[in-house]
Length: 81
Image (tube, rainbow, N blue to C red):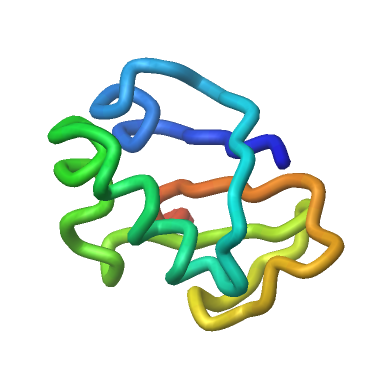
């Protein structure tokens, strides 16, 4: 699946997107796999309350299943004004 990173998440990880082969069942499982890769991923995913996730461009939760998902996007909460 494609994993996309936006804003400071992209800055901490160092790439805007990557192709990930995973056996993760949920978004949380994927986050745990990514955290285990390198320190930069651990730093980006240190505080999940500061992140939002979208699955195939639909806002989702971290306990959402990944079955059939083609794209996961991580980004900070959006603010309006």
